[in-house]
Structure formats: structure tokens, C-alpha cells
Image 1 (cartoon, rainbow over the protein chains, first blue to last red):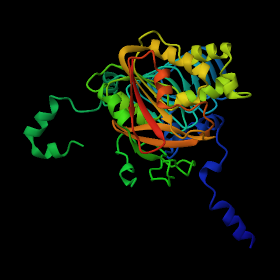
Image 2: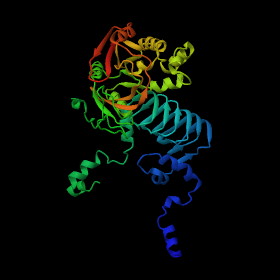
Image 3: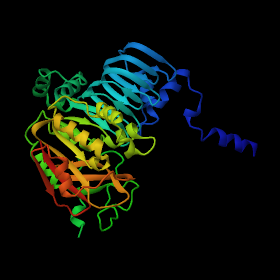
Image 4: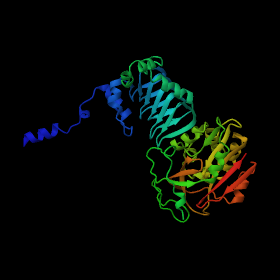
Length: 185
Length: 231
């Protein structure tokens, strides 16, 4: 009987129940409200810089890696080549420039997202948006202008595919051996 | 009889996350009996006429007072237009809440604050305005000031689209989020009901927009009359 209980306690417990390190606690909310995807593991793998909900910053942030921002911020945030996630507890009075922006919290300021911006349910954004693409969930609040810049979106897509084969190399491989052409995965 | 009004939205613009697309039970006046969130489809001649003037003219600036939605943003930006979006009903509650909202809308200083916070744009800035049914929720002093401000904000020759509830003396009218499915179809998403500030017959609508060039009415089969106003 005792043995059974021990088995039950151990078996169904998900790995997330284990005490996470301090940084992971602040990262988790970024993915939790996101409706279906489970980016927490993926984000942890990629290494996301995180600013927790009790942090207040006045000034400028420049990040060269993905950034998760859940605190209060006044100034400018630049994440030119990566993703900026504004957490559900965040209160930003800032102008923002990033490749990709995900908004879950409260932002007051202009946003420039060269690739796309994703405004999630319960997010509040007041300001002008300039972006290549936009996703708005039902329940989000937005007040401001939206300017879709198609060229910027195309450029961002091309920049995101640097590993494509060189235009010259591909025809050579195809003409030389047909086997190689089927092999270009 | 009403079956021709229930159309499934196209996969493209009307596919905002979480929306439920099923025809609601409606009463004879065309109202949804379920204010819990069923989205229904409605043919709109006013919208069709509005976008006829926008077609093939990219780079225009449109103002949408229905509150942001994926459908409206997707449709309007796909035309190559720049969109300014605001939920004016929510802004009204923020600006005039605390007491009788319509009494508060008669106070000159609060009217000025509201206009400066929500309708503060340069002259001739917009090429079209989607007002929807917002005028029915503005008390006369605020409405007059807002229409004067709108007249300054839109370019001569551009259009406004507005809707007016037709049920006289109804104590509550439904409030919708208006989502554009295509150039002639709207998806109406109920978001409760509220007491209207005033009702408009055709003459009252003409008087309201007397500073504009023309007012065109569209007959509808439900309780929302559509109006296109040319600046």
C-alpha cells in the first residue's frame, strides 16, 4: 500500500513541477498566456535575455539576442535582429524597434517591427505601429496607426533565410549529377 | 427569409482567432438574442459604396472607430491603405465615466479633453472614416463637436460611413464590434448593449452632417440604417 502511493506520487508529476532556476521563473509567463504554442522550452534552448517583473528601467536597452521584458521601462528598446517579448506584467513607456515583437502587457509608445508584431489577448498598446506583418488576437486593445511596410517584410524574410544555396551553385549540381538534385534538402 | 444574410466568412480576413462563426438566433428586428459572443454576417451596401471609392487608390489613410481587429487591419492594409484604429466606445467610457455618462458629455471642458485625446489630427488628414454606430452613443453637445472635428480631419471629397439604430425609444441597443469580411460583408460581434444617447430619423441625420456635401441612405432589412456621407 505504501509502495503504491509512492508510485502514484512519482509517476504522473510533469517535469515542469520541479523547482526551476530563478531565471526560468521570469521566462515562463512569456509563453504561458500564448494560446497554443509551447515556446518555453524552445526559448530556453535559444537563450532569451530576461528582465523580470520587479525591475524598473529608465533609459535605453539594446539587445543582440532575444529579449523577454516583463518589468517597467521608460525610454527606448532596440532589438534589431531578434525577438522582443513584452510580458504580461510589463508597463512600457517606450519607443520600440525590433525584428519581431510579441506584446502581452501594456505599451505606450511607437513600435517598429521589421518582421512582424503579435498583439496578444489582454495586451494594451497605444502608439503607432510600423511593421511587415501584424497579428492581433481578439481581446487586445490598440489605439494608433498601423502602417504595413511590405518591403521591410520581404527583406526580413530574405534575411531570415541565409542558408539557402547560392544561385550559381544550384544549377551546377543539377546538371552534373541528377542524384544530387534530389539530394538538396 | 434572412437566410441570404448568413454567409460564412472568407478564410482570409475574417479568420480572427477565437471568433465563432455561426448564425445567431435573431428577432424580427434583426437583433442577436445572444449577446454572449456569436458573430454574424451581414451584407452592407454602405460598406460596398465606401470601398468603391477606396479601390485602386493605395496609400490612403483610413480611420476605424470599431476597435482593432485582425479582420479590419488585414482587409484595409491589404488595399495598401494606412489604418488608424481606435475603440471610441471604450474611449467614451474612459473619458466620461463616473456618474451619468451622457450628462458628463455635456460638460465643455470634458468635451475638449475628449476631443484632444481622441480626435486630435491635422486638417485633411484622413481619406475615409468608418464611424459605425458610434454617433448614437454621443450626447448632442459632444456629437456636434465631434462631427465638426471630423469634418476638419477628412479631405474634401472623401467619405464617412455611419450606422444608426432604427428602433425608436428602445431603452437599450446592442453594441457591436464591426469586422470587415470583404468589401461588402460585415461580421458583427456583439459586445453587450447600452442606452443610446439619442435616436435619429433621416432628417436628424441630414442635419447632423449639414456641413458635408451629401448624405446617402441605404435601406437595410435589420435595425441598423447605413449612411454614407461625402465631405
